[in-house]
Image (cartoon, rainbow over all chains, first blue to last red; front, side):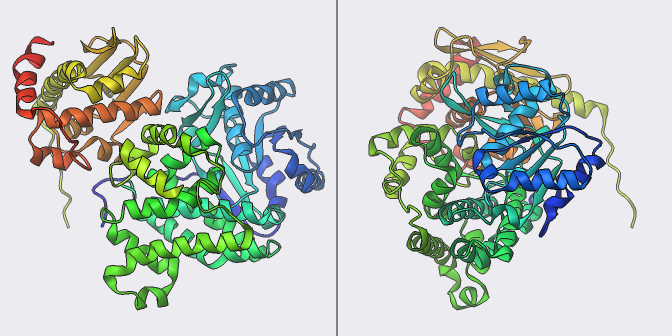
Length: 393
Length: 174
């Protein structure tokens, strides 16, 4: 069904393929920038990716970029300010983020600080607080999951207040995203699994949440199909470049889908569990996804039934009675979780993820205040959130 | 095939503005009044800091509606509010008209990009919850059903509260 009204926006240039990273200096030159700063973490340096970046700049006769490689797993406003100072001191003119969600979100935060000429990032927290374009940002995702390379969101920990704060603005969208399978080859199986489940959650939630539209649907179903075909292979055999490239594409497509149709309660619960019990985002998505689908079953039976075609394949879809397809789609997600547990011990429950049961009420409270809840098809109050959390425990 | 042109009469815009102003007045006073007697709204408001200002504004030049948290309660400020800690902007008169008349619910309004929010998104969700709790006191079920994903349960005498709002809360602003 076509919605009576919708909007869709994705201005990010996607460069995907084997050795796509080699195009980075050319793209920088095309944008008219000369002095980028690379924002990344130590793991990326150890994986040899930064050496690769220096090499491609050298080959292109460009000065090597300034490197900041100390982004922690949970970045904060203080880290953002520290990097912004380095940016200013070195008179940089652009940003290259190489990493997972933390590095990319940090880069978006730095971009706000240096473009707005402020030392208080938090005054721009919330929606639509930015009023002008920022510096050029290029993103090279090293995990296939967050979709941050094509989203208008950054989540940064406020050390002073002790909470994660969201920033949303179309100006936060990167100019370019580079998907190169060489970058994700060294990703360990459990992170490949968790980030892959993050991408699957983006795709599934964007397919049934209330802002869905025909364009986001197209990206979502293509992402679900690619994940079905390649996630297990990428987890089992990380060196398979085809599987890695497919997963990188799936994550980007799921990112485009959810950036335009938004996500629902699985993300509300996941953000809350991340903020309060420090459950990594991808893992939280994996734990909550089947519960979210189940909770929305009656409100979104048609969409969940349709998902089976992409999640289970043609044969599975045809062989499942029409009135059982939605339930079967949920069973397949549960089975996928079990399979990932068998392969790499990816936790299936909050208990296995090390969450203390006493924290559940606090997580429920934060979940119902999370902005993504408004896009969920079915209302979720505190008691509903508690029931789901107990089931997921 | 010929193109169809819609003629926008100047009076339509004026009528829409008057309607929105009227509904802003009703909503403003109703939420302020309900924040005193409805425990769930009171609980939401309690989580906001004292002096917290909310502004609803129809771009580009109004009408506007403002509230401020004063002494633990939400006070209606009319249209006189320079800035808000949380601002809900309706992108145009038509969007505001659709949401206020009320043909489109708040969640659907967000999903259709008819509003943009400036400020803390968690508080925007809290405000949305307040308005959702208020709606069954303002409208009958057949309207509320169209606006919300589910009708909030009301533990108190709904008819009495509706009468209170329409006869005392809204006209007298208490």
